[in-house]
Image (cartoon, rainbow, N blue to C red; front, side):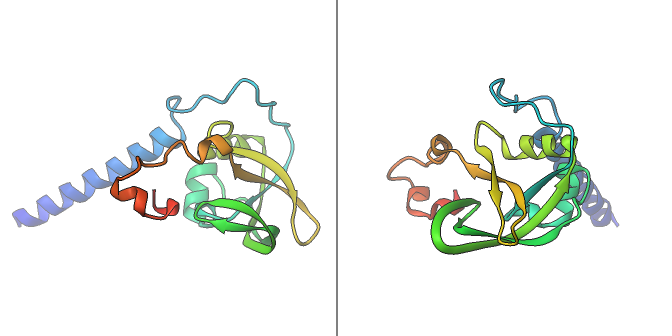
Length: 160
């Protein structure tokens, strides 16, 4: 019976750790300050194209506080490179188009580290609708590069 108590304690500690990490990275007032030069978010409905982790409903619920009424969508002229997009003619990226309000967009901006890691750019999707797309800032592409000669430097960037 002792092993069962230890297992329950370990599971409880794991859940508390995950919840704490999620709060710190997505909701806490620390670790991200929206750059002052970014324009204010308009108080209206916005559409956002997502192609990575935000395709998964549980992650959207934690990050945005809602599911965002997802619809299948395609962004043409880009290819996916890990969690980034690279312009490439005759390519396309499949994802979801989400409908979000200003508060949810602000939470997405925080998750994507708008102005630090990504920029938010308006793009036209293959069906003719428009949506915000998060594109990696050029200076952020090398900010987390491992040192030359390290074992990570030999791995593809998507694994860093």
